Image (cartoon, rainbow over all chains, first blue to last red; front, side, top):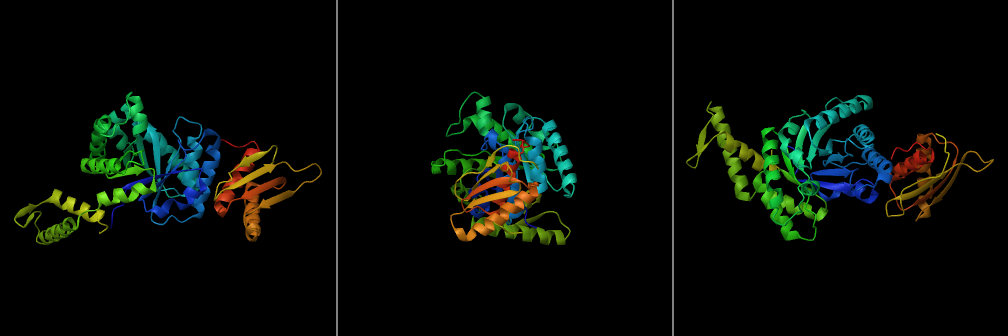
Length: 289
Length: 93
């Protein structure tokens, strides 16, 4: 079985019918229907209905459908979550998550919505967007707060505002948060998703940032423009020689296992569990089982 | 659902529909629909989608005006439901 990839999570404004209906045609791994920052307070009800009706009517193919509801301390959060769960959303990505208690509160709302809408218990997965210094400090506890959790994500704009700084091209102000989030996610067995890159005209800067976060261990990146999707996918696509080597490693490991051995060698180098896991990851990214 | 005031939803952007729902005229209960489409061939289809959404909302008496901009049925449904909620005073925006 091929694991789900989340190399790209495309934000789509929830009250824009043209973008909501076409969100899946750009090939991102996930779509994030946004009911939060891109929707004005007076249009929250209309956006919620538009995304709900679209989810119920349209086939988004294999693209994962994620919603960003309004934050738990707003008057819209409960209605957002009830409507999205009933409409069949795959994942709820909670903004402004600060503590594990936020995730537990979200989990209760989602479980209640599953019950009232007749969806199987546990079918909706959760993500947390970390947008403050406190959230980053609590990253591991947030990641472990629910068995429904699949990923934690850095959301940089609010984070740098909390730090009383701004975003730079080099991203030095995000280095600590990125490192902590990757480590927390991996320790909890989840994916780590990097923040958006807002300057869509700066293609070189975007490609440089994608290379950086991939090397750090992030599993993907939130994107705000379809043009950013192929750049990320290209960066995460393994080279041909990496794929060939990964296939040989897995074959050697399977042969060793058949012999009852947990370790073997290939081209004179030891093949053990971490190397086998990395080989599997390469093949996942290459789209192979 | 009773329509007690004017409610609007949607825009005139491409792929959207602008919907206005208001109380029925004096002595003229029931539904009164006005549909504007970029292509008149689809007016019947749009009217059907509007009537289905009004039935879903439980609106039996109102004046409804729809200016369609080639919206999908699901968009028309969403905009009609939003306009009805607003016109009934039940919107929770």
